[in-house]
Amino acid sequence: MNPASRHDQASRLLAARPECIESGLAVLDDHLELAAGVHVDLLACDSLGEPVVVLFCDRDVAPVLARVASISAALGVARPLLRKLYGERGLDADRPARFALLAPRFADDTPQLLELLGPRELSAYEYRLIRTPDGEALLDLALFARSASPVAAAVVAAPAAEPSAAETPSVLSATNGAHAAASNGQQSEELTEMLEGSASPGSKALFQRARQSIRALSGEVAENHIGGRLEFRVDSQPLAALRLADDGLHLRVGEGELEQSVPDEASFNAGLNAVFTHYFSRIARRA
Image 1: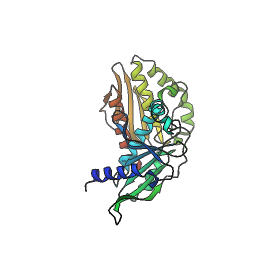
Image 2: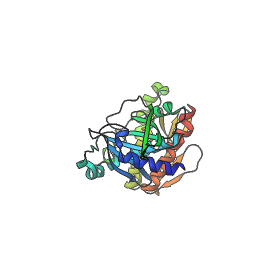
Image 3: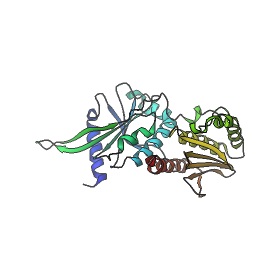
Image 4: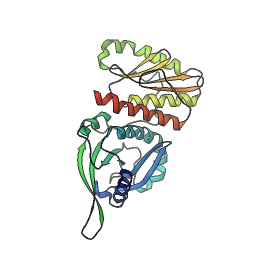
């Protein structure tokens, strides 16, 4: 059985018996698209209404962690819709989501990688498809690892809750010390100047959301305004850069000068996912 078929069968079995993961869990929807290019395999809620997102993956957990980051960002934007669709079925869309990752087998470095997403609760389960003596198909789950990070009261907020550039301090590496504190005011002035430029309101809103989502990846993400761009690094390694111009928002992933235009939600989500994938696959894994 190929991996896609195996995941599909496991998803159907879990939807029929969500108590395989925990008692009181209720599945609300499957293959739910939260935003253009961002979907969850199963959306559930526990007995307290807390969202639980189930994602099926393969042995290497790094790509699915990029999905977790993208979904976390999309959940903040989608809260009003989720409240409308599933509120009467017990979902509390204002609570932070927990994530359950399911794979037939996980790599040995999975427990360390789960900790990279900071204040999110992630659990990794290895699953087997089995049959009872009378031929009934069942899903057998075993907990492989769980993140030790506490769940924060908020993850990635909706755009309406985003503070202005003047109110938001820069996220700077602790190694910058006193220089970081001294440059905070200048950093905010430069951001304010970018946001007061001639780019459209829609592009400015995408810029704010992208900035917040990239910063939420890790406390080690440092940002600096260089040559008209807002650049993000982890230690000395380039992560991404954002640039606001008359023709909209532009995004660069990693090193180099190649930028991609971000004119709409689909390209925004694809661009963020590329940043998250670069972080988990190349930067965090080498740390």
